[in-house]
Amino acid sequence: MKLLRFMLPLLLVCISLNAAAWEDLSQQQLEQHKKNALVLDVRTQEEFAQGHVPGAINIPFDEISERLDELLGFKQGDIVVYCRTGKRAEKALTTLTNQGFEQLFHLSGDMQGWQQAKLPIETSQ
Image (cartoon, rainbow, N blue to C red; front, side):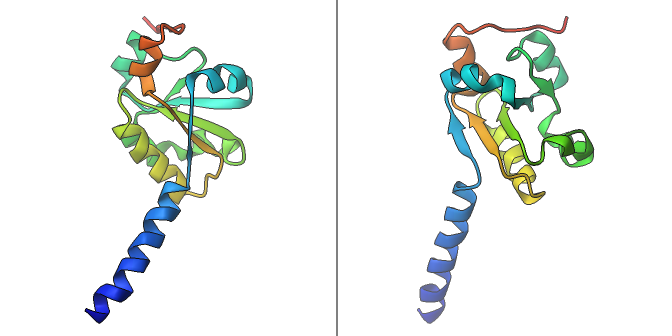
């Protein structure tokens, strides 16, 4: 029981620190601030080629650690991350947080939300 009283507050602190590491950004907010942010699509190259947020760059979530040097110029700037539904974006955001990136945002609704809102899409094909 004593261990539980010690571990529960520690667990809550860890959860709150991770939850505060990035904020959700709406599609409208991204449209307004896109010029000042790096938009990072963490889906596969094939998904990216089929359609992505205009101006986004593509680094698949499972390559983030190996390709951090491509993002170092944005370490102090805003980075908006998205995938198809949010799961890969969360993994990428966790990796970036652990590497010291501070101005991180998650695009609300990810690519599915972007498409449902009928916002512009670029293709690489």
